[in-house]
Length: 316
Ligand SMILES: NC(=O)c1ccc[n+]([C@@H]2O[C@H](COP(=O)([O-])OP(=O)(O)OC[C@H]3O[C@@H](n4cnc5c(N)ncnc54)[C@H](OP(=O)(O)O)[C@@H]3O)[C@@H](O)[C@H]2O)c1
Image (tube, helix red, strand yellow):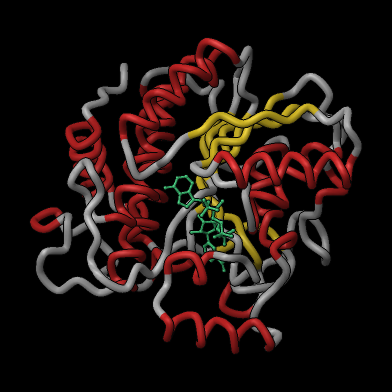
């Protein structure tokens, strides 16, 4: 294993300075890593805008964080359901009108291991729709604000990118044939990661290198992910894993996305997450990414397919 650039303990939020004046936008903060990331950023005096689908849960999050951190925290929420392009569009339009800057857009929300094929209102397989297409549209629409702020786009992927079919099933994006929860989830996370590396190349070609794009993952963290959308069997398996040292806290799971959102001079080509066994737990830093995640022919095609699917054309 290579030496961690942040020392033996890896990257920790102690490296974050005061964030007063900075704005972080996070999708999916009602639980898990998104909640923990919001809490840590607020504790450093940042402004946090949450993009969540459930207004009641968002109000509860605000109340909890105010109780824990004080009434003065700068937190707000805009309702957004990543499963509906119209909802993403509406939220992004509201953001463009009401938010002055974005230092980092953290694309954290996801569903996982959906046991039976589900199709969104826009006609997408649900995991691809929520995890990839919803965020792809959000990133594109918010780009002008991120660019104005010389900000970052951070995608929370998964080691699942290296499971499943390890490429994009262009001839059957909705998995009408051979649907399995794991393969479809894996592909959605691979799509998210691939589009970040593709975005980096496009930013460079368009001479827009003031904006940075990063891919990371939380390892194996004790969150609500599987209990929200996974099958009973997956819930039992993950329930057992949670009792073993194969998993880490949701707070530690938030470190990679926080690092990518705040750390200076981070190499964009890297893939960031826990560096211990199987990259499930351990000190946070950069680690290996398999070549299929950076396959240019596939990522270029995915970009075109994603623009067509979302009806959003990036300006570069
Ligand atoms: N936990 C792990 O071990 C693990 C492993 C690999 C990757 N990840 C990745 O880590 C990220 C965070 O997940 P987590 O583990 O913290 O899971 P989590 O506790 O279930 O949090 C997921 C968040 O996404 C939100 N969300 C789900 N569907 C949404 C939609 N249609 N529109 C808007 N928000 C939506 C959820 O909101 P609701 O409360 O409304 O459901 C929740 O706030 C995900 O990208 C996941 O793929 C996690």
